[in-house]
Length: 462
Ligand SMILES: Cc1cc2nc3c(=O)[nH]c(=O)nc-3n(C[C@H](O)[C@H](O)[C@H](O)COP(=O)(O)OP(=O)(O)OC[C@H]3O[C@@H](n4cnc5c(N)ncnc54)[C@H](O)[C@@H]3O)c2cc1C
Ligand SMILES: NC(=O)c1ccc[n+]([C@@H]2O[C@H](COP(=O)([O-])OP(=O)(O)OC[C@H]3O[C@@H](n4cnc5c(N)ncnc54)[C@H](O)[C@@H]3O)[C@@H](O)[C@H]2O)c1
Image (cartoon, rainbow, N blue to C red):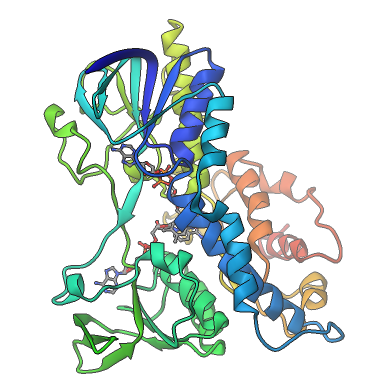
């Protein structure tokens, strides 16, 4: 066993761990970053980046078809799509990421990290002592339901769905969350016959109903069959085919089955049970990223492993907070997690933006509907000069939620082609608590889709 000492040891070199480490280095600390697979994490190789690279060509083709005069072919070139995706996933080679880690002044440590004592992480035969803090950024892994036959059916998880280079003739997708709808559409547009199996009436149950309905319509327009109210009861693979039995007797048969039923935190091989934490549970943190269940104020966590807002941008935000907090506390400063300071991930409670990159897109931030008596919803079709020019037959819808007592925006949901870029304005308005009377003076450009803001404020009586 060798012993090494750092100010901070970060376990997990995904986007969140990388940012926590970089921020602590910026604060003058020495940092080791432990990674057992690839620097860059899930996001770079099997999640955000490759999934968006698979979706973008289909969205571009559909957009071009909606504007007469643009010469377009009738189908995607799947080989070219895969090559571009492979390049965005750096051909699943993390040399470039490791180079960035070194150049940032972080010490990369390859191997599986386990917390083996207070301020101590063991990686193989190396014991890493952390003078100030250990930060857990181990992310999450796919959660598979306990269905008879599933374990032996060689199913796809999001990893295969984002990295495969052969288009299956028939693809079944179980689960209508974000992964389910994005991958159903990406593969349908690449040429698969896709059947989406969802439990409820519509996909995307975490979003307003009009969003789930619009995305379901978009999927159907691409030839996807949506099995609603469908409860999968068993799975089997026979003669190369995968079969999914549903509770009502229906059966879905495909060449591949993507199981997209959510994720669980990567805490089961972490050693934190020594401190009374339950392997497999999220690491609960306060707004500064501190894990209070472990005494001594040395264990922090950020990103998917905390269960707060399982999105890359929000995890990186939490990572910046954790890095700054640790650096400040190491310098002897007293930094309570006061809201809206650099030492608190306050936005997690008010303004988490998310985009579902389907066609139509869904872009949302803050509350998705009225939750309190003082909340007021306004909902309109996204039908302005900008949207009409953007695409023939443009259909979209927007809902905003305002707090009528404070007269500020608290939530917005946009649905329609290319609405992703519209959500940041809403995020700024919510975080800045911009009074609606002042928002009135933020004049949207004509002719752009943002003109819908004017219509929404007019609905509110401005
Ligand atoms: C298909 C898909 C698409 C997505 N698309 C988007 C999107 O478009 N936008 C978005 O914001 N979010 C998206 N997400 C979510 C996003 O991928 C996660 O929120 C993000 O990856 C979380 O980052 P993280 O660093 O917390 O975890 P991860 O990216 O999971 O990284 C954790 C790292 O820790 C390492 N690790 C784990 N345990 C140990 C250990 N004990 N020792 C050493 N290393 C360890 C892992 O190997 C990994 O590299 C998507 C998710 C999926 C599944
Ligand atoms: N564009 C993006 O920002 C993006 C894209 C993909 C994933 N992500 C993130 O990654 C995480 C994981 O995504 P996900 O789609 O796997 O999870 P999710 O939690 O969003 O959706 C899982 C869905 O599966 C359903 N489900 C669960 N068990 C089921 C079962 N036995 N049968 C049928 N349906 C079942 C759930 O009701 C839910 O609708 C999410 O938190 C998401 O925010 C983000």
